[in-house]
Length: 189
Image (cartoon, rainbow, N blue to C red; front, side, top):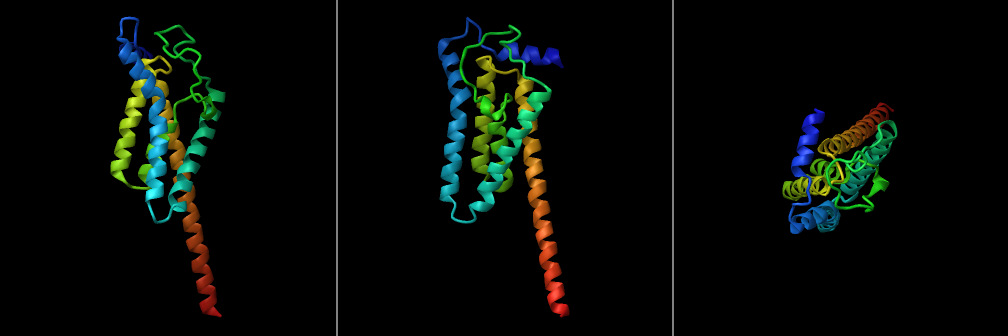
């Protein structure tokens, strides 16, 4: 598995022979898809006239839970970037890579999955999936992450999404049970 991870990284990672315009695109794609996704999400939410609290709050909770899981996993299993072990080329030396969310790239994949579940607008989610793929290619091209780290970030995001879905679903079931019990008691008296 490690051999596959390294071979995919070496295949995608830019070298000194790579065209500068391609490296510039890699830098662009490792930063801008996240901004585009957030702006697109805000436009989508503001354009939607029905229940905003039912959609935005679970999405924000999902990103918060995934961030917490990311930090917990990073505490248990520290991130080793390609630069740390001197593999490949890093074209973004010294850049802050959004470490406040944790060391693994979770934001776009978590946002995409939570929007698929809570908004069910497949055109918007399809655009987000394209941004996730472009962002993954960009961060590997400029040497920030290994492909397995990006996949692990997607698993962390999916786990955070699953936790929030289970909590919201359980909360709705509990609320339905309580209100049905109150209705039963009121009809008995």
